[in-house]
Image 1 (cartoon, rainbow, N blue to C red):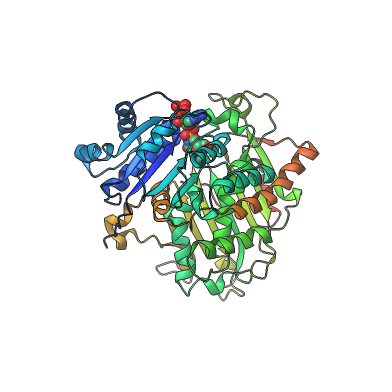
Image 2: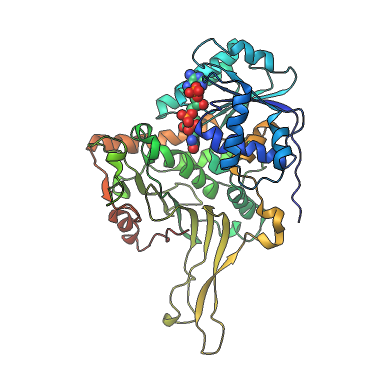
Length: 484
Ligand code: NAP
């Protein structure tokens, strides 16, 4: 099966923060891959902007090196690279100052889709939006792409929404959560809403619980100063895990269109019960013989910021009444692995007797490092020797059926940037969704602060604190293996 690449309309894309880590690792190599795939038309233009006083030739060199290091498998060779670079210019701009803006104005073409990617620290989001507007760059057909973190709490998220709204309409604002751009996340929607098989079972009557794990092996790395003011709850749960929860739990939207999908996601967040503090475990990774622990990493020996969270929550609506959703995320865990597991209930009666043991269907949606969907089903163990049951995974990724083109799927950033150019907001968070997510997480964080809670230490390379295991054990359940 050959995947179809439909070129987008010609566009001008300005990347603020084009010399930064995200631009070099994801945005620029991703654009190059889309260019190689034939999705970016010949008259598209990409302008890098940052304070660094470099010229376009030096920027081209930076992009060459970024593609060399992070471009992965790129099918269009040296000639393709030169063709891509010919579309790239650079303008030194201070987002908080006045220099560079008129040069940027002169580079952008009228009557063209315009996108401005804010790949800079959040303190610059408002300043850039304001200057785009005051310099007449915010045309009717302009879009802005806003990176995470979107606010630090409800108050700051509301303030940022209000600032952006002074200069751009909501349908021009693309709040990015790259988890939503993953192929498998969209496949999850296809599986749920494109088949008759799952939807009738997708409720509290048939589903025992859902677990969502986002496990990382890395520590806070060079982001220590920022991370210590944030923590796992703000950095991961409020956005990525919450978005995944929404896609699992939402009602079928009437159409696959941006507001229909986001209306349903918003209803899920608003139906979340406040979390009982007995149902939350916070952790902080300790040192190993060879590696410093969290506190050394962030250079704050008294830090009480969590690098791990596990919690149980409930969605108060007809579909999910009394079905627990367990969320878990942490740094320096035993493997890098993100999985959503939908665990179905036991059959009401086992005709095979006690000795057949307990067998459950599990729909597992793996997001990283490899993407894929499997359905664990129970079958008879082949061979003689009576009726013995065994659980086997049914691979629903169908890589073979989709062929080599199916394997070469665009990375999340590639897909999302193309969606921005196409003007499709379905996979981006709306302002009210972000605010609702903060409204749910704020009281949890405030509770920790009020009680002066200190996170439980856990060993690097483990599955997190013991208490996180107990959170499940107390309910007669257990976490899925954190596996690659
Ligand atoms: P970074 O490496 O620190 O890069 C920041 C960029 O902003 C640089 O290009 C910097 O270039 C530019 N910049 C700083 N001050 C500026 C100013 N006053 N005017 C114009 N440009 C300015 O940060 P990053 O890791 O790329 O992250 C960018 C954004 O993406 C952040 O909001 C971050 O939270 C988010 N994000 C990053 C990642 C990631 O993997 N890196 C993942 C998810 C989200 P100059 O110093 O030359 O100005």
